[in-house]
Image: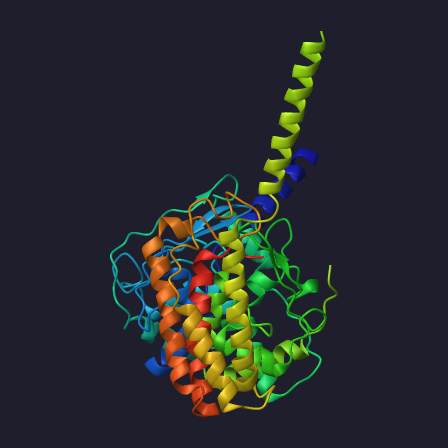
Length: 298
Length: 156
């Protein structure tokens, strides 16, 4: 009898685990909103630069042209292995054959058209908060970019992280990071929240992670080690970032700091992207950064 | 015995002197790196005068803006081939953030330096005209700084 209960519990546990790790797709209502949205290419271009797609998906060492070829190939070292950004150009090697719903499930649910989980090096937990009309517009814009035939390179990830199914457990635990309540509210701060937390995915680098790679939301934007090994990604909450609003706006427009050094590394790409956005969007990000709860320096 | 002691003393003294000479040679980065850092500091000083005007942190002064922008263009236009000898990268020495890939991609590195020179000339053409001209040209210079730092400078 006892043996039978244990066996039943084990079976139940395995069933639950299988259920938890299964790829979860976008909801029916989200998919309906996607397919009824306009294919607004001009809006999609703005979403594209706000979301920083090109920074990671252009070929290594190439500049982000106005209409970049998203050939992939840049390496992203991490504690779990090295990830290689795939080809996401509208070619058969990229996303050329994808439907809008396949695209949206990739970007927002982290599930490939073949039904496999993506690694969260791809910031889908942030993109999950994007509006359906923005995702549909992004899809329309990306179809207009040059097609590139470079095959995507396989990630170099060791056991057990190479078992894609295990990412279902990761998503269950860390897939919906909860942002802190802000100190103030305004329409500009709301827009900034959307940009920082959804499209521009600032938290992906500026918030530290636990041993399993989940965001430590208790230290939201409080800085993190650089996964490349060298240096530290700064705390950008008011406890550490004391730049004035004017200095932040100048930084997001020209890349020049208040003491006239320039942004470097990936942040130089981020600034190039932000410089393409409307001034009101850069101001919205500044307003958000002034309203986010301070996290003490470590 | 005395001879051996004298020889040993001479040898020790010689090694001490050469050791000191070596230590002296290793005090601080090489002259080229100091010159690079000085050049960057000079860029930064002139950019700061222009940037503070562009931001409204200081009042726009056409004459001062023209001088700072002309300085920047002159500095960016110098032939920098003597500043970047091999063996002055982050893997070889302390005191620099210059990544080794500068020397693997020298043509691209040089073209990025050329982009800065062009952006600085464009800035110098308008900085003394009016504030709007200055503000409009700052992004080009900042972008040129960032493009090179993105690819070739080690993060802090």
